[in-house]
Amino acid sequence: MYLPVQVGAAGKESIGFQRDDDGENISGKNENYCELTGLYWAWKHVEADWVGLVHYRRHFSGDRRVGNKKARVIRREELAGKLNEGTVLLPMPRKYWIETNYSQYAHAHHAKDLEVTREILGEKCPAYLDAWDEIMKRTTGHRFNMFVMEKKTLDRYCGWLFGVLAELEKRLDISGYSQNDQRVFGFVSERLLDVWLETEGVPHRDIPYVFMENQNWIVKGMNFIRRKMRAED
Image (cartoon, rainbow, N blue to C red; front, side, top):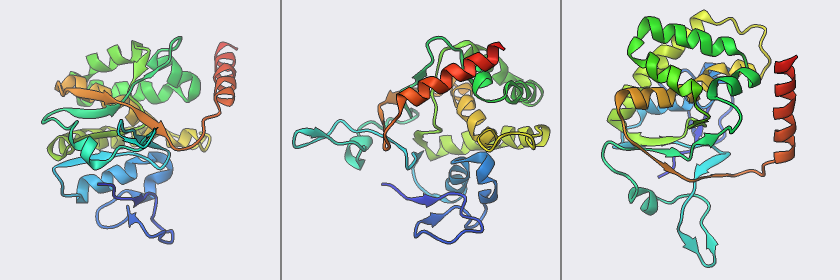
């Protein structure tokens, strides 16, 4: 059920996977849109009843056991059993505990990114503004741009998402951003998914996910403290 896609493939040699610069694409924007260039390609080209997105670093995990060990990556048979018409599968939400969705982003990146996004929603699609304001106050949210949804739902979501991001791209000057912060459109999209689902009344089900690389929680914790100290200076 998995189709490996080489994202940001424009101008690069093939690594043997499906390229995201075939046909209609935004592959050249990968440095700023991250995995969304792969999502855009799938939206425009994949013909399937259900479409999802996972990463080389993160996958939905399975409950199925192989011998005495739990299978790390969910398989087709198990995932199929979780699919229900109209329901989107999402990774378990991230909890920040002492941060809101807004403050966590502002400390990690640039608050301006969220402020301009809010302006766009207010001007272009005000029906989403209440959900945006509510979600920014929460301490939990779905991240990673990971999901599985029906293709007809994906068509609606991507039409809205990429419209908002295109307008954000016009309004933001990211020339002075660090290389990491220039991934802004991928970061903002993570915050937009819940806004769209709640405004549209689309039900979802949270399922576990697994990191495919080791996580250095000490480094992550120190980076969090540094961001907090910078924010308070």
